Every structure is written in C-alpha cells, then in structure tokens.
Image (cartoon, one colour):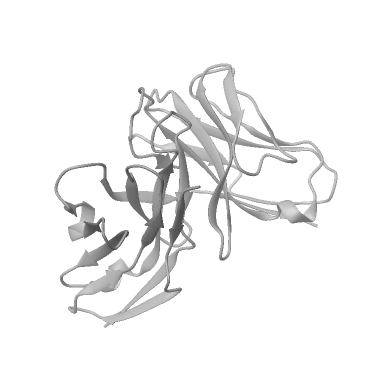
Amino acid sequence: EAQVTQNPRYLITVTGKKLTVTCSQNMNHEYMSWYRQDPGLGLRQIYYSMNVEVTDKGDVPEGYKVSRKEKRNFPLILESPSPNQTSLYFCASSWAEPNSYNEQFFGPGTRLTVL
Amino acid sequence: AQSVAQPEDQVNVAEGNPLTVKCTYSVSGNPYLFWYVQYPNRGLQFLLKYITGDNLVKGSYGFEAEFNKSQTSFHLKKPSALVSDSALYFCAVRDPPSGNTGKLIFGQGTTLQVKP
C-alpha cells in the first residue's frame, strides 16, 4: 500500500530533551515536506526537500532540523524542544517535476507535547 | 504573498442536503488550488485540485469545487451530504504559483458536521 508513515504517533516530552520524529514514504517521491498544524492557523510548512541531500526552510523553521540522506526518509529533529513546539506534525511527499502541481500525500500525524 | 481564507469555522448540514464549504484566495498570478480532508486521527487526504481549464472540478467521494476567478473563490460542494462526510476540510493554494518549493498555503480549516 502506498503510504507515508510517521513515528511516533504521540509523544510527550520535556523541555530541552532532543527528539526525532521519523517519516518514511514508499512511493519513490522526490519531494518531502514537514508541516505543523495549530488551531486556527491551518498547516504551516517547516522544512522541505526536493531530493536527497537537498533541503530548505519553510515558513517556520526555527527550532527544527531535517536531513535527507535517503530518498524514502525525512526525519524531523528537535534539538532542544520548547513548549511552543507543542503541535500536530505532518509529513508529506509528492513527485517533483519542474513546475509540477502534484498533490501531496500526508502521513497520519504526530501529536507532540512539550512540557 | 499568497493567502487562503475559509470564512466559516463550522458548517452544519442535514444528511441528504447539499453542502458548500467556502474558500477564497489571494494570489499573484495564476492560482493553483487544492482541497484536502482530514478525518479524526488521520492525515490529510487529497480531494481535488484546480490548475487550469474547466472551472468545475470533480474529485473524490462525490465532491466537486467551482473555481470563480472574478470572485477569487474555490468553494467545495457536494449535492447530497453523508454523515461520513463529517470531517475537517482544508483549502490550500500552491506558493509560489511557479517555482518548485512545493509549499502549500492552507486555510484555517472548516469543520463539516453532517447530522442524520
């Protein structure tokens, strides 16, 4: 089954404790992205990657890191989480052709609480 | 800058009645518009998109959307609502229209409640 998977689905942690949220897709998509969803704000892009070893900042990158060492994986790293990073996080992927408008496939989400 | 507005936090409709979820946009250049649905505890699922061509776009699960350039709107519609359509709906616009960041600008979301 074509899908985007994220782990963990739920995480409660404390301020300053480094964590990683994994994202993996099995559709051979070049493009991957991370969003956070907050009430009343919709989804906002954190980071994106056009292909392996190519990443760039989205609208709200502060406090986050990403890496893209393999095509299928795009982990989100919070080096020192803070309470304002409490949110619902979504990973997404799609094919990436020049000027493409392909729909993005989303993972099930990771609900993160930082105490 | 591109932006999307969904003016209603919640839409209530009786099962079997037509439904409309509203979306307006502001873009420079040609708009590339999407609708996604989020069921409880699930990720977003793509419903439909408008890139160019016919103003009436048909999508998954019987949904359709009408692109109206003069009113800068892209309302989601369904002729006959089902209880199972109850979910959170997001309108989104690609940002920027050209270029390849792939970023989507999302509206705030509209909760659709279909009552039996």
